[in-house]
Image 1: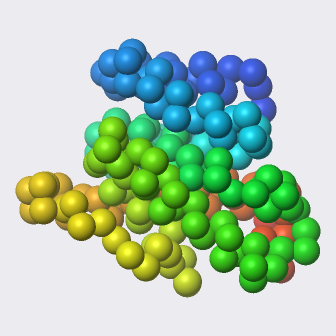
Image 2: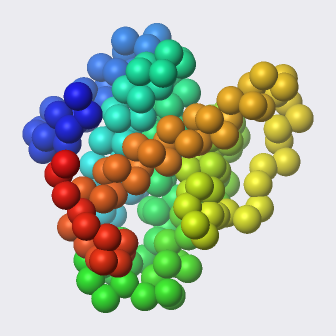
Length: 188
């Protein structure tokens, strides 16, 4: 079910746009989201394509557990938008991954948060959680804007963040690199 989203084809963006259209998102919001992604696409196409795949997979996971996929469409597509401010050499590194590289890449969450928080506030709350479930979860600072949401919504943010983390990790484990140490990376 989930592996078919990995197929490399030129319709990846089209499939992401169609997912937005079927979820009831306005065309203005769709173009705005893709506008935020243009610097990332120009800098590193594989990271941009990773964002498209995470978008599709995260929304499929939300549907599977009977949650609204719309929140994860935005968050999935924008989760790595802060990587547009990461050095290209770090983004493209496939071996020799160091602690300094890890420290540099960790900045992308807060960079992305600052970039889009005024336009897609709920999605940015979810994005803040997408690396929190790792052994060295980050970022350490979390949003102070949660007061604007009702208690039920506040409870859902970490759940959506966990689904985004799952989609992001699944796709990352299917990329060629040694960022994950000796962990086996398979198509299973």
